[in-house]
Image (cartoon, rainbow, N blue to C red; front, side):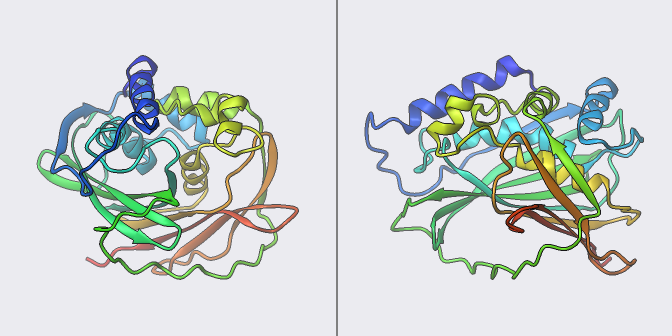
Length: 285
């Protein structure tokens, strides 16, 4: 995993890129990809599973593969040739197709590239595409969607937006008490030291009243509560209202028979509004 010291320069670079020091005249994305091989180290993986409350098994949680590829994603998004500022982008959706099990001790070959930009009713989106292979076999394919709110690009491609589902808060299966320390713990385990999760002033600078939890912390912890015994599956996550820290939120699993999608949600107990909506469904062979 990339250490804290190696991620901070990327955030500093992103902040500088967001400053109005000049005009980026290139409206499309640079034709660039990154490749890197990384081992699944037992100690680092154990730290991640402890934070998200997952059992320490030999099969690697797909959220950890996202974590390993995250520095490469940030490196691409912070490229000066990308026509949208990385800082302020909102992570709105994640899709992971888990095709084969990855095990602790495996060496994983990552390929990361960008797709888009795409038109969105609230701005413009960029997708980060990640492929993870072990000994040449494709194990995971991930699409992470980031929204640059209020930013419009004339050449952005048209792409259908999934309609937002109506959500009625169910009876919670569990209550999660989330204290501010969880931002620091997940940052240490994942390498994601985005200041909006760690510094109240930084969070306020981006329009939040206080710290917000990492979206992938909530999504990964929720997946750990789902009994996924499928050999291959699709894990879809939609991020809605950010989780403010500290807070207590509701968690519910609403379905989940074999061959049917398991649905789970993280939601605000007072308003009933969703924080995270997710499904896990079996992939056809």
